[in-house]
Image (cartoon, rainbow, N blue to C red; front, top):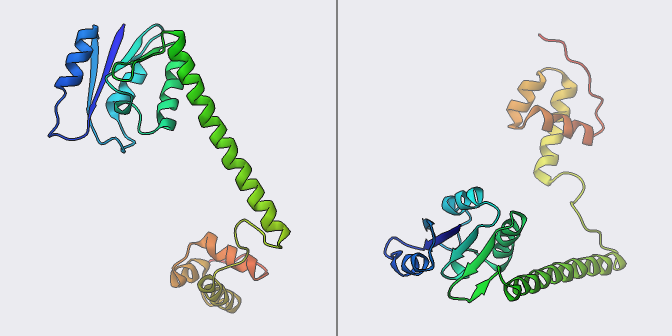
Length: 196
């Protein structure tokens, strides 16, 4: 079964050009979407991906109607491949029902994977160079200055025992868990409080 997907970006545009081309090709069902290309949420595309079955062909007028980016497009193609569904793009002359169409997407996927590997390698090399210069990556240890001040107050209130844990947390506008974290940071022995 040929299933079409049409997307326009604004209400000012219309579906006519895309719909005429998809109808001409014999699409039995067409999903229509009005949403910007940058938007992640596409309810009609989601519905299409849920309904496709093995042997179906998803047809678009242009690839940019389907994916937000090459990465997104490759993710969609991966979903189609996993369901044994082909993709046809009329304007781009791509058809994954043919060996040439499959080759194109395999090459594209390889380039995307290669780019990810390069980024990983550069990140790793950068971290190693920083370590050699004595710099350490990751989160800074310890509390911020504001948190440190609250931790000192928390310790004082806690040691005085005049307020309950809930009252101390409310006064400092922090949660009980954060209060206990502050106390542990300051090596305060946490004692069991009796209810007043």
